[in-house]
Image (cartoon, rainbow, N blue to C red; front, side):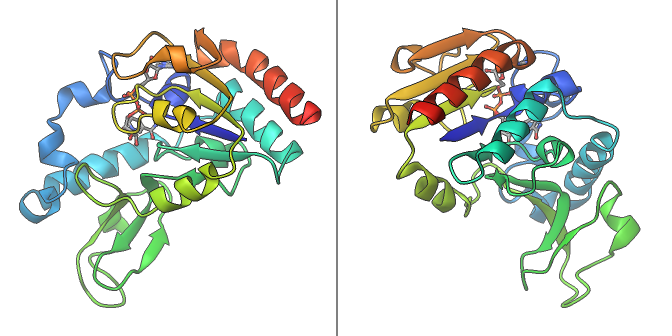
Length: 231
Ligand code: NAD
């Protein structure tokens, strides 16, 4: 059983989504601050952008959807896995410590040269490090940029090998398309977004809920519990 989430689940916590209009990203050019290579030619601006986002999540709180899903994950620790494209820490703040973050974790910085990794919390990178404390290489946010390898995808595919039910919440399907996961043999699949997305074929899902995640989550929890108890 996999709960797969994207930026939409954190929208009601006040964290901007990527593609919805009015989102944080409207004000930035992707190629300048979150594409592979931008650290080479635009280091200061890229670091400043992620500093801002790290500071921004400090006072954000998990919403009902995060909290209910974490409750479910605690009730079924062996059966249920949370996988997220999000780099925020809303699931962690709700009490879950083993979420699979496919695209990194905003609170962390890392060294590409020696692998040094540290959770710096909600501060600017330069307030903690000028460079890697082990090898002096410049540090970077532990976030996967467009065009970069995403090593955690291997873990996701591993989780998918024996997945029998998939719940997709708050993702437009532009970065990772979950339709293909469902098509590869998952019989029970729920999709929850605010509205249809051009990148998602809703016909492959057994249930589609176009409403806020906080309004859909009770029905989702009920369906998951029923599935797990009957299974
Ligand atoms: P996206 O912005 O492309 O799509 C957001 C989706 O969420 C849309 O389909 C929209 O209908 C839906 N949505 C919006 N508000 C919702 C709500 N209240 N309840 C339910 N659904 C809602 O997001 P994406 O597909 O996750 O792709 C964005 C990429 O950018 C990801 O790879 C992610 O790593 C990154 N990102 C992360 C965050 C974060 O960590 N919170 C925020 C922005 C972007």
